[in-house]
Image (tube, rainbow, N blue to C red; front, side):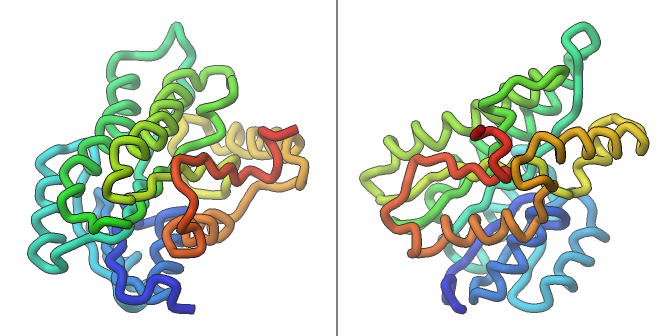
Length: 249
């Protein structure tokens, strides 16, 4: 317990799914947690679920103005942020012939542009020796039909971890990518598939996972905690894959 005692931790997209599970675990381990999300009610519900040491800032990671407001809030209230879990993201199936510029821009604005400028604007508030965790995906390393734009965005996220590790080495800021496989989260309902298609997709995924099941959000929160705390003090620039072996065999 208390692996993050006296730490200030930001979890974007912390109002549901992997973000909420991670924010709850960070708080249990002693961190003061700030979560973000676009919907006020979901944020209020998440703060109540976390139960203590939780603060929420409403905003869209793709909006530079919202990132500025987040930065100003953290600076005024806490003065620093020791850990960033850049978790907010969006994914949808878009085949090449039917992908619109709006589809492309939405995915890249949130998954790539938003994460870049989030870190850029918060960098002055990160103490030397801080930890940045980027939520990637095994899709960044594999080929899935009708997933090309999302997969490309997550490949860019993985690249950020490498280049930022090199660029921030003088400050000993560790940057790592956490790449989940199939995890049971609300994102399945935001892919554009019908409920029947979602269930069929999940069944198909389970058959491809050596452990024979879809992962749970807590199975992402625990590796995120590992990358956030001193247990991983000599680890930076890596991609930690959490997928039940799906992309490994």
